[in-house]
Picture 1 (cartoon, rainbow, N blue to C red):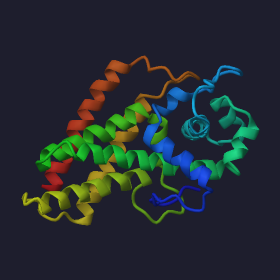
Picture 2 (picture 1 turned 135 degrees about the vertical axis):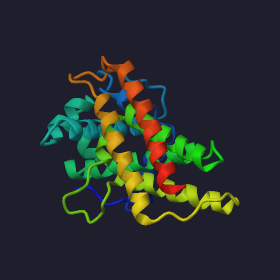
Picture 3 (picture 1 turned 90 degrees about the vertical axis):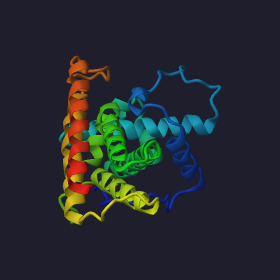
Picture 4 (picture 1 turned 30 degrees about the vertical axis):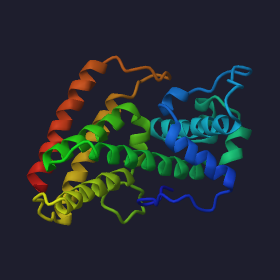
Length: 249
């Protein structure tokens, strides 16, 4: 159901759909804050139509991630209930649950990649860069726990050792080493096994952080143990950076 390390180009889409996706990627606020949809007559009619369509599609994607993380058998009924939209709205964008999951994975992977690229730009030394990546990686897990869990799933038929999300982290680690070497900073080439080990640790820590930030009820408010979750996330950040330093430096 979920593509292995999906590519980030938008293909086989109508111009309207492509524009909606691109707007969503660069401009949408916290995804889970969009749930559920406003009640009838409560939409902001002053928003451009393209923005309203983007938010509507993003609600469905956010609800898809939430349902996949919480329910053993995701269904269209569960997705539209969580999104607060009708079934017809779902089918305007997707043919079935599988296509919605695939689209949600691609959208999350793109956001995650952009998040890590932004983190890379804030540091220069290897240690600073790995700390920045660890911080951004786990902050994403805390801010969008359902989305992170969605891209940490490894499909049963996958030949990859890590998930789509883990692949994004691994690519960031490779990119950081290449960037540092190109800048004249000593950064020895890391073996595939070491990169995999750091990425796998990142996956495990991200799962723990994401699960700590998922509420047990139907609401999307901050979990009751928010303070404890933050301190645990900080410990995971230090641990992940330390793993990167020990294996990649």
